Length: 230
Image (cartoon, rainbow, N blue to C red; front, top):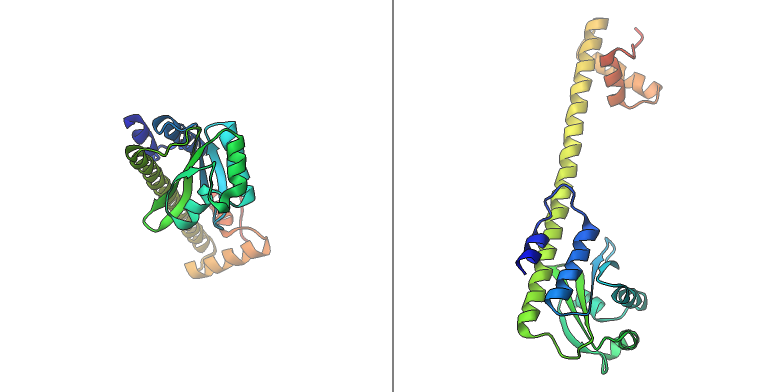
């Protein structure tokens, strides 16, 4: 259990692999919660559920069937933000008739869906399938909730860090580009006996005439590969 939580919390590594992370989540859920199958669905930007990991092929096909049929405990848990803690598939919710028939055919007797939720934000669902008709015990329900919560926080943290890292890289690139432009302006101003504003205007006009990016032109001026006409 400790290993599971440590693994799920560690998304700060440089080689973080989302598919591998979610696959390990399904394995930990199946092992610790005595499930015979597990899957993880995450919502895309349009709110559509996408299957990203499953513990085995049977669970994977059932999850895809659930998405295609637009019915099942996973979708209900995502839409409501509440856990579907136990669904006896021999007497299913009328909304899930087709899903229940398919799950029962695959040998499953119960399903449990845990929303991956942080406060009011639901990003996906952890699905558990069991060949045992009995519901999860209260301790296992709490453990399943904890696993889903830690995974949710980890994914949202990684998403935030990734966004910040991208912005930081963009800012660094912009800063470097700006230094090149300033240096190129100085060279042109000295070479042509003009002020820096005029140098920038000439450089910008030349970039447009030659259909080149200003940053690339500035770098070429610095290295001497491009000389602007008088």
